[in-house]
Picture (cartoon, rainbow over the protein chains, first blue to last red):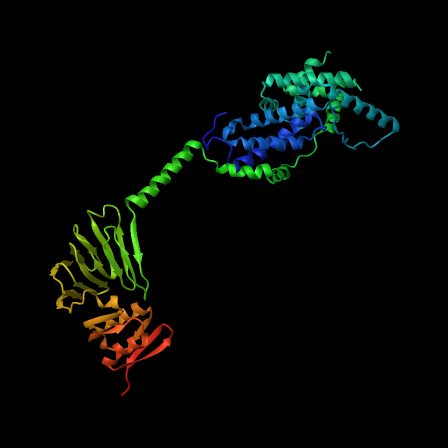
Length: 172
Length: 303
């Protein structure tokens, strides 16, 4: 990589902090939805930003985001290759039911287990796109920018993911 | 599935309001809604951006690297060094002015690049440029100094009171506020002050006081009296004698009298303050007292 003039790179501390505020949460969520909680996504975010700082003279402002996502993703893949981990997702269920009969709870539990299994069975690409959209409320366009793919591809991934989930949980 | 297209369009937000109403009443939508609601349970843990940023900034890797923000772009780094070298070169070798100063009660002597000697009396500043000294022997001087000039090109002593020009000689220049006196000891000296031009031969002196020029003869002793530890005066207004006393001892003299225009002839030593004060106050019947360590009050003797 070529060394860039100071005005174009990200060596300014102010700018660096700004980048962190802008991208760290997205990066964290991206890693979480893609790889689960088995690996601490927070740590990987930290490492990615340290790498960005170490190479600040060579990274253009407008390339910072893709640099961060690529670095964090590679880092995660490195870790995954070292240890095979089962993807798991935390469940914190909203307790907004008023009539909790034992059968109802049992059914609920069953439903959630199937949903979790289905989510884990999705491909990484489908899962990231789907969960960022449905949980984090990211627009198709935002996800496309984040992953560096087209909007059409994002829509396809979300739709495919949803169909798979529907098929797994049934029409309860 | 029959509802596939509907779900797809609902997801993409391309469904009309009418269609949405109908769709939301269907069983299909209810199960879809449940699925999407349940999905919320898998939300990523909260991420505190500011806390994470603070954590990042406290890491060693980041701290050490923060020096990196000062890492200069290599081309710029080289340019910066070059500029520095040029400035240093210019300052020290091209345009550097050497300045020598003495405080009150201090004397010193310096040698100029051609080994001409300058002896500075108390509270005097001398400045000269080393570059091109051979062709331009000019010394800026404020105060009093004795010059022993090596033979060579024209030698100028520039003062606020006037300029003294010589070829090779020894002479004394005294340029104090309102007082300009040049004494020639060897060779010849040319003095220019305003429109006045005077040529001095050994043993002659010229004094310009308030724009008036006066020629004098001195008893030639080879060097001025101040080089032998005393200040000597010949018909000098008393106020200038007092100013000289102040400079030689680094004191302040408060003079409550009208005698400052009277002329004084005599001398005072540099190493004995009370003797020096007596030497200049006795002829005018003045008494003195120390107000503070460095403050002397001169007043009329009570009869």
